[in-house]
Image 1 (cartoon, rainbow over the protein chains, first blue to last red):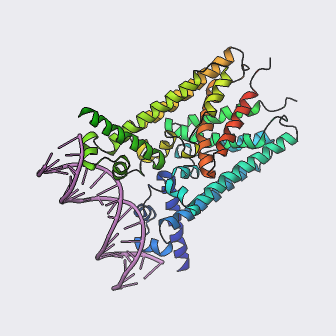
Image 2 (tube, chains in turn purple, red, cyan, orange):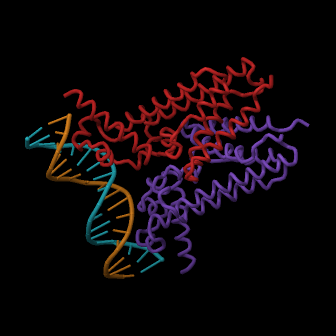
Image 3 (cartoon, rainbow over the protein chains, first blue to last red):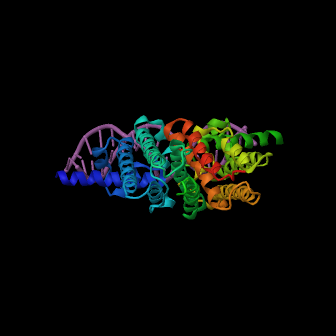
Length: 194
Length: 194
DNA sequence: GTCTATACCTGGATAGAC
DNA sequence: GTCTATCCAGGTATAGAC
C-alpha cells in the first residue's frame, strides 16, 4: 500500500518536527519519535536511515513553512511599515520558541553541514527579504535616507529571535510583545513626516 | 587539605560552565564533566549531589558574571547612548552564544524551578537596568519624550540574544555586529538634535 | 513494510574500599 | 576525599522473521 507508506513517513516527520521544537535534536530520541508517531522501530528504520536523516526531513519542512508564513505577511497590501508590523505581530506560539532558531543552540545540528544548511539559508532569506522591503520604503520616500536597510533588517530578525528567548526566560509571552513594540516604536521614528 | 577541596569544586564548576555553554544541559553528561575537569567519579559525587546540583552552581556563576560585566559598561562615564553602545559593542564570544540565553532552549532547565530562576532573574535585571538608563536619558533631554524606556530596553536585550542566534546560524560574527548596528542606528534617531 | 530480538554504548548514579 | 566496581535505564542501531 503506497498511500499507507506515505502516511507513515508523514507521521514520522511530523512527530520529529514537534520533538525537535520541544526538546531539540540532542534531546530527541528515536524511541520518543516512535512513541509520538505511533510508528514502530522496524518501520521507522525502513523509511529513514536514522535520526539525522529524519531530522533533515523535519528541519526542511519547518524551514519551508516558516518561509511560506512570512511571505504571506510580506505580500499583503499596504505600506512597508504596515507589512513589517503585520509580520512581527502575527500570531505565534511564543513560548515554544522558533523551531528554526532553537536549532542554532544544538551542537550536533550545527556540526552537521546538511542539518545546518536549512537553518542558515532560512535566516539569510528572511533578512534579505526584510532588507529589500526596507530599501523599497527608503526608495519610495516612506523612510528617510539615513536608514540602513541591511542593518535594520538584521536587527528586526534578531528582535524576533531574542523575543522568543526573553519570553521563554520569563515564561510569559509579554516579553516578546514588548520587544516587538520597542522595535516598531524605533522604526516608526524613521518614517518621514509628510 | 581544604585548599585542594576548593580547587576540585572549582574545577568542576568551571568545566560544567564550559560544557553547558557549548552543549547545553541535556547535552552535558557527568562523564564529560569528569573528563573536562580531570576530577574522578567518586570525587564529583562527593562535592555535588549530582548533575542538577552542579549545573545550578555553574549557572549561578555565569549569571553573576554576566551581570558584573554588564554593570561595568553601564557604570562608565558618558551619555546614556554612549554607555548603551559600549555595552552592546563590548567584546564577546559571539559564536559561542550567550551562556545564559542558550539555557532557555533547554527543556530540562526550564522544567526545574531552581535552574530556571537565575535565567529569569538575569534577564529581568538586565532589561530593568537598561530601561532605567533610557528613562534617565529621556528625563535629562537626551531622548525625545516619545521614547518608551521599557519596550526599547526589551528590544535591545532581544537584539543581543537574537544577534547570537543569527551569528551562530551564519557561522559568522558579522551578523551580530549588523544587528547591533541596526539597533543603535534606530536608537540614534531618537536622540534630540541640540 | 512491519515486528521482535538482540547488541553495544552511554547516562546518571550508588556502594564500599582505601 | 578519592577510587573502582557495579547497577539499571535509555540511546541508537542492526538482524532476521513474518
